Image (cartoon, rainbow, N blue to C red; front, side, top):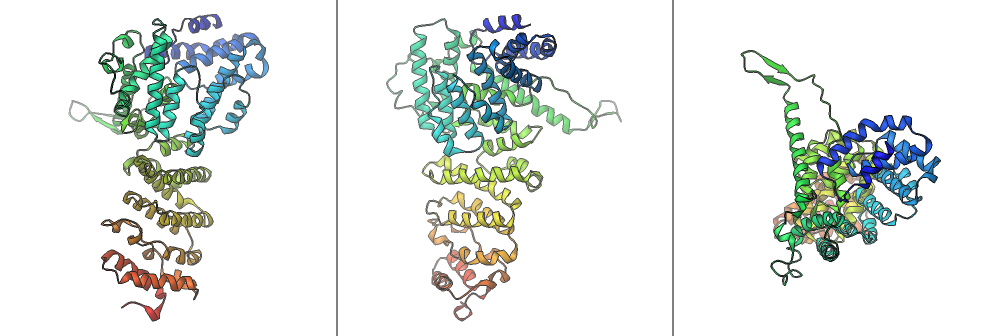
Length: 534
């Protein structure tokens, strides 16, 4: 078996992404023969078999199942002398990638410390971990280190910049990679390894040509093949359009299957006859649904979008809509890949019932990363994309905060007040999720503990201070959310007098919304009876 699989690997043409039919063949051949081969193999054969099996799983976009992981770990631990340094690193990188996808961070870190030469893969996996954990500060630091002699590192680095909403930088990197591939292809026209990479670069160039309109202004009509889309990619079985077509077909089949499963009673033609599907069980061979989509994205370096142009974003969303399992890893994926809008999909993963069913450690971990993502985003509100992402992240955090204990809820409430008073928090789309965060965090705080929050809440800026002329009604209002007993801890400090005086002065404003809110704030809980407005 080892010799046969080695022959398959040596005869592999060098496709960046193996054709769909080739992946199916590898999946079938591997899954049906690997266990029997493991049982019969000697120590040396097991080590070599582990390497060949890992290679086939990676090429075929198959998850590394437990028996293969155990075989590979045993080879690295007990028989490393039968593998060269490159083979050992390939196994470690594959295991590291599998650990990242199932969020086994202790195992991930243990493997990173043992990488010998594959520094490019190590840098890429670390950057992808930052992306998967919504650590955009870390991703900013890690993205530029993803480099290597293989031109595909340029495309992967560009995808990381897309995750940072830096479409302009990503477009420039893709153009540089495209030019480098053309230069190399001019010297080696027969290389499938180069041609398959050129195909994906050409596919991406069609999505960034608008961003690069200045750079491409003077190109000749026949200069770039991505405009004409030659048949050579299809002839060589490396056409990206074929791959995306297979993804779309798989998603469509899964959607149709889900619709059919929802119909438990299927009427038949003859009167009074029907089929009852309520007890039907479906079996599916091959990788889990959606695995190939995300494996393709990481393999090539494909992001959700480049600027305003969709890459795989719509397909990520379709996957989330029909994903059968909403486990911890899928919940993190949803936090990253949910569209930047408030629609029904957010309720599928973060409804009140769903949030209540999540483990508390998971809620806390995602909440910490969402806070960091919001802090990262508000430093970049000059970019519209980060406004949209921060709207989504703030709404997600507001849904998780209902699970917080009183202490964490109070910290979140005070932090949300900081957001409200941040001069950069002025786009009207940010107002509603901010109010959700303030109100829901306040609801998670017991009434006696709220008394110390009344003064900070009253000090929050009013609509007139939010630079929201004409849309002041969107600005959060907290005075309505406190109960009369919450005002019982007021004192005669200057801060209270200053707040009341400011509210009374604002109440004389001609703006109806400012006057209404200031009146309510100054009258709430009888803060200052002697100066109460009529």
